[in-house]
Image (tube, rainbow, N blue to C red):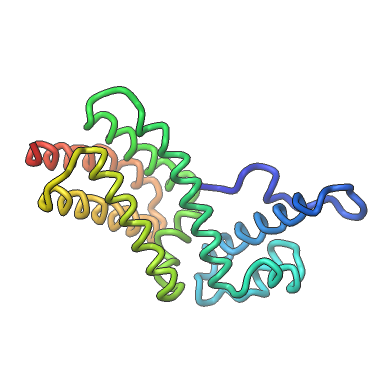
Length: 207
């Protein structure tokens, strides 16, 4: 769930001949990453804008040219993280195999993504709870998208089946969040087998 290589690197000093779009993209990527890294160490509440711009190597004016507030920057970083996670998960949607085998692959991709980037994982799963109601509403929308995708994936059409999908997504997020919050990242990939077994029982009941 990290930023694309290159964009989050500091620009060369002095005259560089880079286009304005490249400069703005680089600055934005560095600020988004700086916010996530600062919150990983300090938490959302204790991360001021000054800390973000210091880590990103940009001016306060540059920050406010792109973001209206710390929360606005957080939302942008959250949206970027979700987009990258969706790209990571996408290949599993068309993978061969039974529904359960494909779901197992998707769960594995998600858990590996979380364990592979604890900074962004903490921002998405932990610090977003401290970022205010607008962020909470965004999280709810995103969680709803995951529920809808799972329901479509397993063919859940009844209210009972959809509720089972909702409960399954909630359980994944809760269990992964608790491990990320305590820094127990080694335990995240280990959730794959029991979660797949759980969903296997759910799928059996849905038939």
